[in-house]
Length: 119
Ligand code: SF4
Ligand code: SF4
Image (cartoon, rainbow, N blue to C red; front, side, top):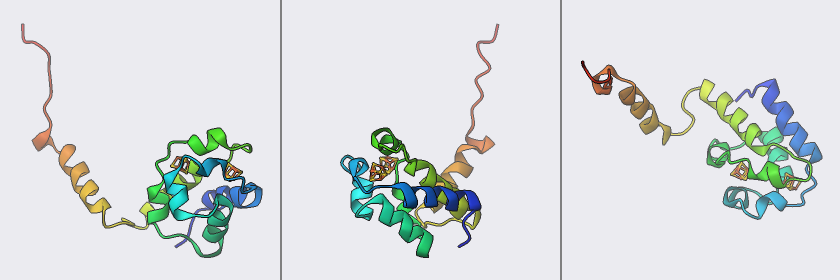
């Protein structure tokens, strides 16, 4: 998997600067489930990549950035990984249902147009 320069740069910024204080982990079940601390997680990403389920499990809520003393943007890095992964096709089988939902919900067949009250 080839990640973009921007994604790698974001990950490197976190891997190099995170001081493992774990403040961001206190309220984040995603981080608690997938890492000991973000520094190690992003180091792992740079060394060998991550399973797609990892970036796709971040809720992109931004809470980590709010509590981080360095204001590191974990959510932006996970989103960038997702954007790179999607360019290579659907990275998770669970997304198949979303793809179908998008096709159907934007189809003319199921779209109603409200033209307002006729006079
Ligand atoms: S943006 Fe992701 S990593 Fe940060 S607190 Fe929310 S779920 Fe956790
Ligand atoms: S709050 Fe910031 S510095 Fe502390 S572990 Fe999380 S990302 Fe690293």
